[in-house]
Length: 200
Length: 200
DNA sequence: GGGTGCATGTAATGGGTTACATGATTCT
DNA sequence: AGAATCATGTAACCCATTACATGCACCC
Image (tube, rainbow over all chains, first blue to last red; front, side):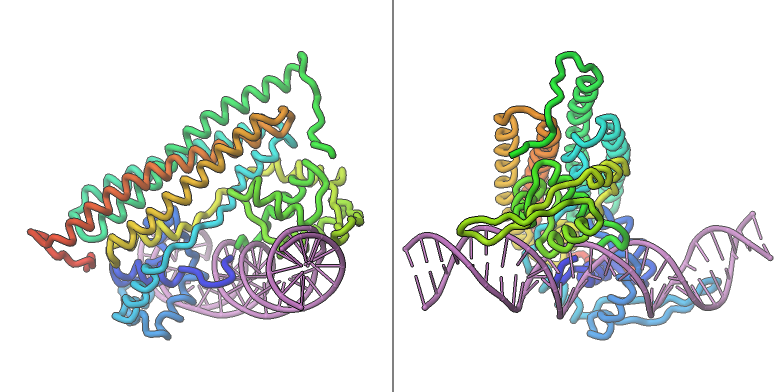
């Protein structure tokens, strides 16, 4: 999506500071750690690891396993840590969001309020589940013995919590609004059927 | 980014229900209406309009202007409205966010807390400005004579407000945390220099 | 004369998801 | 025998940003 530069390889380097891992592991770890604010597919992970290895930013060794296929374990090198540090020193780029729910709501006059209510209700369910996940993550981090990384992981989990709580509050407010609109449209009492076009 | 389907053309169709517009106008309108949750560049707008016209979803006519170049004004057709309605009936896809600030914070143990504090402070400033923008947008919508679209625009503006407020609360909490960490690291009292690696 | 705004486009580039391909082993 | 999990990878596709190209008119 960005015409220049993405932080995919830096995300991989960062995860490898926690522990040496295989590409497969990285995929799993991403999903259950940074997955809520940073995603990577295997189609990105494997080619990126190859490139990182070619640049000497990670080292790899084959590991034999019993009853399972061989794994290629990657670990970050000193050079890789330098690259990660350099990346951390660059101010983060603001994200350009693409929120399809909001887009559909913005054009909500072009459809039935009932449909929109359904979308918001689905969102409430998923965000409630996400909130619980973030809370669980925070408790797990708190339970662990504290080391250098934990305060930062907590900060990320807190972001998710606070944002989900805010979204749920908005959803409640929005559902009330949409219900009012649905009622109004169903009862054409003094309802003026205004043009939806602003016209000239 | 999505391998299949994006809502770019539907966003354009939706905006054309408000008023017939040129591609140039669409770019401007996007920035000042849906720009906070949906962006399109001219490199997307113009080719998409062409495709929409070829499919008969929009009609175009050239408009001569004095002192300015000609404009090609697009308006949505009946077929275009059908397409938009069909799209609105499909549940919105959840967005996969990519938040670089959170990613850098997650790996915060690999750099100085001072640097991270700077990033969060910049975020506070920009989000405060955004909050004001959303509030201004809401006031403007409220001031306008109400028609079919306004309640939905308000809903979108409220989302921005509530989210920005939440982010600012998180930022305050996070700055307090980071300051504690910075102080702790500066004074190596009984500070155990634990390994940042989880090891095996 | 040169910068800025209006206006429409195209091309290069790069990134990301999905789908496909392969193959071993364990469980049912 | 067949499904599921572990594991690594490639290729097709598509989409989005950026940069480039063009040209007119107005203002300083």
